Amino acid sequence: MQNSTKGHRLALSTTVMHSLLSRTQNLRSSYLASLLRQRMPSWRAQAAELGTEASAAVHNTKSPRDSMGEIHLIMGPMFAGKTTRLLQHVREAQSAGQRVVVVKSAVDTRYSTDHVVTHTGERLPCISLSRLGSLREQLGTAEYDKVDVVAVDEAQFIDDLVESVLHTAERDGKVVIVAGLNGDFRRQRFGQLLELVPLADRVDKLEGRCSFCNKPSHFTLRIAASTRQALVGGTESYAPVCRRHYRELHDVRSNGATGTQQADGEGEAVQVQA
Ligand SMILES: [Zn+2]
Image 1 (cartoon, protein in one colour):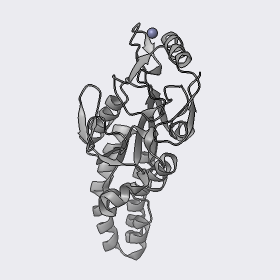
Image 2 (image 1 turned 120 degrees about the vertical axis):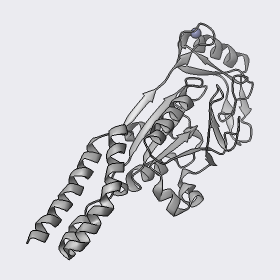
Image 3 (image 1 turned 180 degrees about the horizontal axis):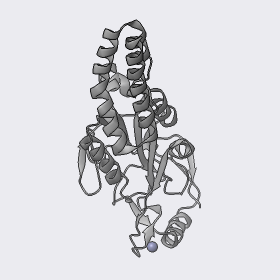
């Protein structure tokens, strides 16, 4: 009888901790998660000594990995500081003792294939892949299961973005931080990023500074001649612009290049006229 009460108390402690975990976020939850991980083995050992009933009660409570993850979306035009913001979150999670893996699209080879690099030169090691669903395979299941946070940069290039982000957060219980473009240089959707908006816990839309007037920039102007949507480039190919300068300069470029052109390597005709 006494054992059974003690067993229920242990089970209650684990349940309360999980409930707190699911209600709190970021630093508090990572503190609670590490506390839970520290205490759980001792609770389970005590429960095992108390007998089958107590042990089953403790084991039947959900582990931190069984709980729901989160989806954070960081979006905006080019040169708005998306990667910098992503790396800030990565460093905060790491300093709170969480395991983080940084992923970027294999398409983005601008500065490095094995690092995420901001336009200002800040860098962090990463894994390059074209399908986020292959992350478990690349890391190995044991390593993958230990990961708390998956940070994805340039997410507009990831083919299976929506399906994989949902799986990572809701099936695997990880926090997924996704950074990418909210639109292309024509101000149209790019990849699957916008489909994550109704699925996300938090959406941060960032802005930069217009290259021509220094007002807030919400759009990306393509300076390079290509009409291909996925032309990966930096300041030589793109500029951040405000609404006025987008209209003035994009329209000038569009009216100068009339008709249709073959998109580079994409096998489809792209209308250049605005
Ligand atoms: Zn402007």
